[in-house]
Length: 269
Image (cartoon, rainbow, N blue to C red; front, side, top):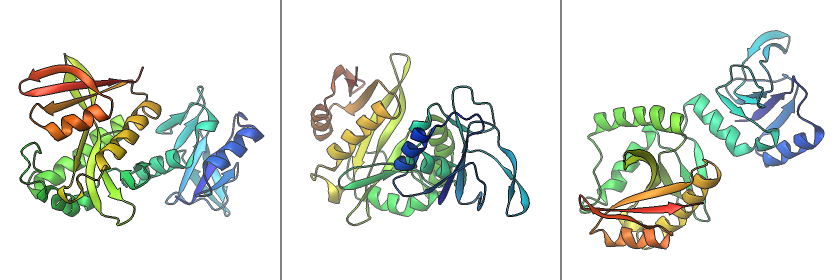
């Protein structure tokens, strides 16, 4: 993503809001207001308070379709809508751009790690990570390659794009290597669809505080960015390291020994 074009057809974005938007871009993308000069659909994002339609770009009429709509009264074709202009920031726009281009979206970062979505290009690394856990009785293995590819394609469409969460990949900032897989999934508990935190760390990277650091950030993300008010965790009753971690993260016992699983809950209210 190189530029963010903002069309304020309804004049709801004031000078102060414009300054805030530019600051929220953190210098990582150029912000252009009410001007289509240089627009390239392949590299740019369009945000608008209304349906933009046709615009003159370098002497040619170009159809510009908004990627993000703005305002409670927005009526247009944008697949994403944000209610307040001040909420527009670089990371939100980057996620929308990733959706548009079919790329894995950045989710969050901690002091030592980057968390992002999974893509088909990551499968070789993912198999290597799971190979280090082959002797762990609590980890379900990946499918064989073709079935796993199909699973990932469906997961991207049905989890990431619909729910805006799922199991993500964790990369070391220092080495660039994949060190874990953590995130949020759906689960049925007491007949209700709830959100469950999940995590695994490759064997060479265990006992380094990775799961605690990243899961703490995921919990904050769930609360602040996704509006989730509670998270659950379902752990084999014999998985003592995982039970120790979930207690350290602030989860409390919800139910014990349900088909060999203990259920924990963290209520953010």
